[in-house]
Length: 297
Image (cartoon, rainbow, N blue to C red; front, top):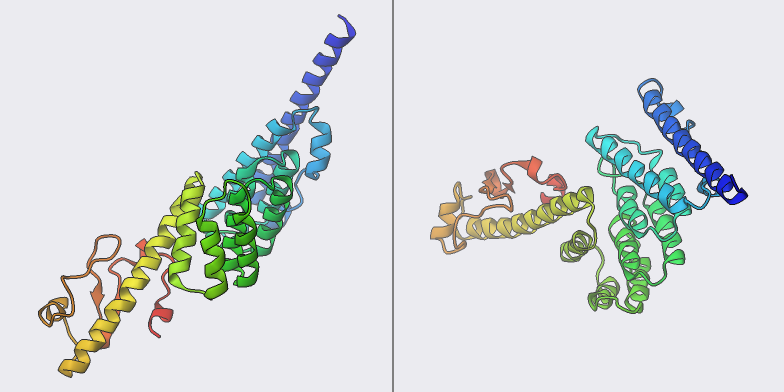
């Protein structure tokens, strides 16, 4: 066997060992989870840079393994309505150390990180750190700036930082024109429903991850229901001002010319008309991001 062939064989064996070690470590994490949540946080592999040095040139392949693991970890935690996602950022950090050009890990991973539990890790600052790391490695990807602006606006309520992210992204060759529009909206508006809907539509359109797309659909439905109910409450109050009594059915508002028909929510069910002008959805589980207390104001 010549020297070149020996080198290939040794490298292949080491790679197999590396993969086996990764699998064993991940299995240990899973088995320990049910016994002691604290153990889960220490049974973990070294940094991505260390793993990359051991990858023998197969770091991109290992990155896919770690990205898959991050998605599985998030999905399992989400299904359990977990309040903690302590391994999520380390998994994403290692993934992107192994392959700095794996754009999906930055973009989708940051959505996993930024949302409040149980829908995410509740760590918007780490989401920003991950996206900024991604922008340094991939400055030509305008979608990264969009997601950064999304996190700043919706999760951190930092409208100036959101404006800067959208503006910088709009200057990237190939960026869609609405990036410039979003930058202008950041400068003109604080938090408002219409802007939130634009951002969630953008997230839906720029990701292929099922968890993120499903979350975007639920956010959009909740926001649309909020818009509908605010408008319906205005019309109910108008009826009260004219008639001196609160309506008990939607038909009364239709007859009064205040509605064109019985109103239905985005899930196709009739809105509930509550005493003294209240309005609510028939099945709140269809709209997990509605805030009844906020709508009461």
